[in-house]
Length: 373
Image 1 (cartoon, rainbow, N blue to C red):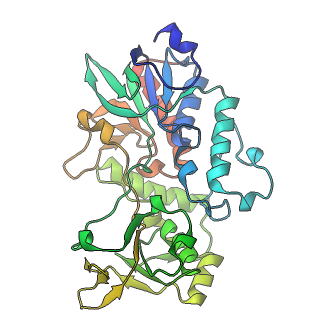
Image 2: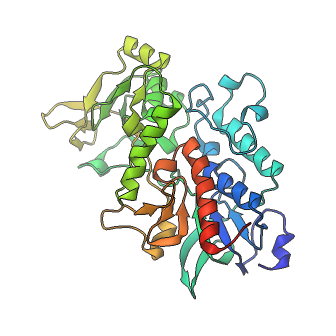
Image 3: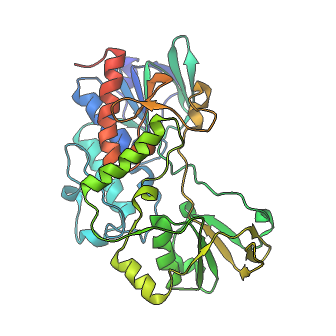
C-alpha cells in the first residue's frame, strides 16, 4: 500500500488501487473485534490491513435501529475487547436509545485503539486476480491476501413470497423500515414473525392500534433464566449446521423466546393470540386456506435477514443448498477458500459470538498467511 494512504485520515478513498495484506469489510461488532486483534498482533494499518465500512459514521447496523429500542429492551450488548460498554454510557442506561448508545460506544472504541476506518466505502465485489483477492469498492480497489468479511445482515432483509402479494393495496414493511408505532395508529396491522423483534414490535403497535399476529411455526417461549452456558450450547447447534454447509438458523430459533414482564403483560392484554401463517394475500388483507379472511391496512414482515454476502459471489463459496461449508476453531473460515473468513455469520451473529469470532478469524487468517507476531 502506498505511504500516501498511511497518512490519510478516515474518509472517502481516491479512485486508485492499494495493496495490503488483509481487508476487513465492515466495522460493526465483529469487524472491530477482528481489527483489534490484527493490530494487537503487531500488524500495521495500511500496509498490513485496512478496515472498510459503508456507513458514513461509526455504529454498524445499530445506528439504523428504531428509536424506541432502548438498552432495557435490546439483547445484551457484550463488551468489545479492551473497553467496557458501561464505561461509555451516560445517564440512566436502561432507558438510553440503542441507536445512540451503541454507535457512541463503537466510535469511542475506534478512537481508543486508533482503528482507522475508511468510510463511507461500499464494497461492490470481491474476486480472484493474479493469485490475490481483488476488492472493488465505490472509491477504488484493493489487492489483498485475505479477507475478513463482517458485513452482517442488516442490508439484506428477507420477505417470503406469498400468492397475491403484489395485489395488496395497503402498506408492506419490513422490520428494517420500522420507525415508530404511532405511524400505525388507526390502521389494522398484520405482524408476521416469531422472533424477538416481532414480539417487541407487536407489543408497541398493539398499544396504539389493532393487530393480528401470525407465524409459520408455533412460537416457543422459554421460562426461567438463560445463563451463558445455555447460550453457548445454543450457538453450538447453529455452528454445527454451518460446518455441514447448511444455511444458518438464527440463535433464537434454537433458544426460544424468553418470558419477560413485557410478554406477561402482552398475555394479559390478549395480544399473544397467535394465528398460523396465511395462505395468500388479497387486495384488502390476508386469507387462510380454510377461507377465513382478515382485512388489513399494513403487513409488517418481521421475518429476519439473510447474510449480506452478494459481493462475494464471484468466489463461489456457496453449496447448491445455499449454505457455505465453514471450518476453523469457531467456524469462521470458509473451507473452500481459507483466505476468506466470515464473522457475524451463523454462530457469530450474536454480539458475544461476534467478539470470539473476530479473535479466531484474525488469528487463523494471520497464521494461514504467515503474518503477525
